Length: 393
Image 1 (cartoon, rainbow, N blue to C red):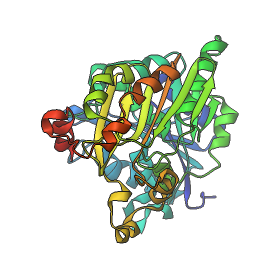
Image 2: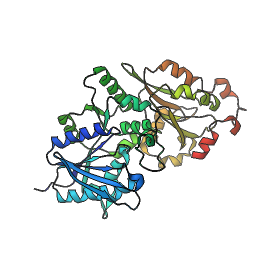
Image 3: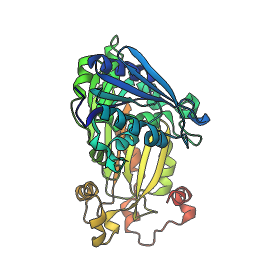
Image 4: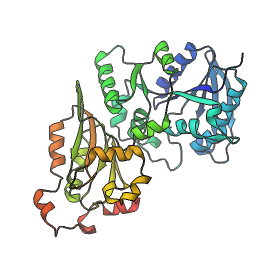
């Protein structure tokens, strides 16, 4: 009997290819009618993509995919989504496992699997995304979250202009899904506990599970909402926990209602960024009082960029155009004197000295005297971030 529509799709992502493939093998063996599809992008820079299909017994097919433009989005739009819809229409398989390439983050795939239109019909007619799982290797997690290597250094770049770091990609793969599978570490309980603590603190919304057949198979019976995942990971609205400590792994969220002095922040960056595996959030710079700035650091790499105006800088009528999750966050952050302008940056690290970190960050804030000084201004010469932020506006 053909499988009813919409067909179940499970997305499995992860930087660590061997661990990810092992988890896919477990899913295939848990469901005899499942099939896995993987696009090998190792030669995408040369315009070549290989589509590999396998079932529980091994490789079924390997096909070269010819694309007008060899890129990740084209691979999704021109090959993966049409193929899945065609297979679902036939109804020969119970589950379609999409195994992502090492350097691809799960979000664009999940959004394509749920938001694409095929032949004037929404893809949801054919496909139902039941789970997004990122698989990580216990013996590589901490090292890869702290490395300074770029994706191109690993041969994992997915485009000529791919300048992402390994730590950045891994962090985003971990933070998006609602399931994280930890592979290995069984012989060293301390390593496994430390890795579990890191995963839990980087993504409190996700279930952290071992790569065991029955456990992974149970994850395929749910549903995944990309809109909720996007809202949860939106740095303009996230509300991370204040503090968390599990063994040597610690997280602290720095929240303040005063702006930072651009010169003092710039001088403190080395001390602030290098001490944690991951830090992210939004911040308020005195030299850009009406602009929300996003802080995104992984390993030793920090990215800062404008995220539009603080809601307190908008006219009331403009609030109707703001997403509900952003308005809710602004309400939680609201202080009468400055509205939703705030510092909200979460730091996670192993052996993190949270008290010292908070002390350094507090030293970057404007003092009460500076706030009271109505003549205090910051021109471009006084602002080390002016050129960077103007270029990304």
